[in-house]
Amino acid sequence: MSWSSWFADFSAITMMHRRTFILWAILLLLGMQPGYAVFDPPRIAFVINPDGAGRPTDAVRTYYINKGLESSINKGDLLNVYREKRATQIAPAVRLFIGVMKVTRSQQGSALGHFIPNEAAVASPLIRHKTAMKSDIVVPILVIDSGVLFDPGQMSLKNNAAQEFQKVADFVNNYAPNRLIIEGHTDSDGDTDANQELSEARAEAVRQYLIEEFDFITPAMVESRGYGEVRPAVPNDSPANKTLNRRIEVIVWE
Picture: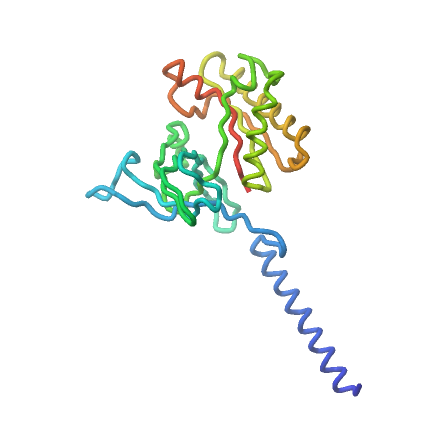
């Protein structure tokens, strides 16, 4: 091989390495790594069926979601709705919970739903627009009645709670997320601080059980949070509604 041809081959290899390095740099700047999927949650693409004034109430709005059956979004599902907020353009986004989306129709590539605002969440001064909007994230959730898992006022799982966790395992297998959040919620009865402590302990008990019993659920994958009585699903104005508020939520995050 002549020196000129050797130098040409060396230059080509060097250029290939440079291009590889540049590609890696671009991916890192975008927060991605080759070989790993980028988290791309379902989002609201647009709002349809507004009233004549262009200001429909949530009761008559229909929200178009940009994913459907292929993302295991089915008719009747409840999805948590979050709004992303950034302090600056380069700051990481913070997700603020604003309510739930009930799916009314789903097909390949899209779904439709009706938004139900969470009164306590949208009362926050950080939420300027009190209804769901284009680009808001919708996140799949599994809701479990706390009474199925725990005796009243108790933090330890019932002995017969194991069968309920198969639903959780199926839910996790269905979505195959990189991260799960287990949330504990209570009704408004009793002391606020005690309710907060109870919700945290119950969420952690569920987290520990999932880690211990299912090999595909790792400690790094699951986070537990307790919200006490501050995020009621419905008003605490009847025994039936209070039962709905005493719940564990398993949330697909990323």
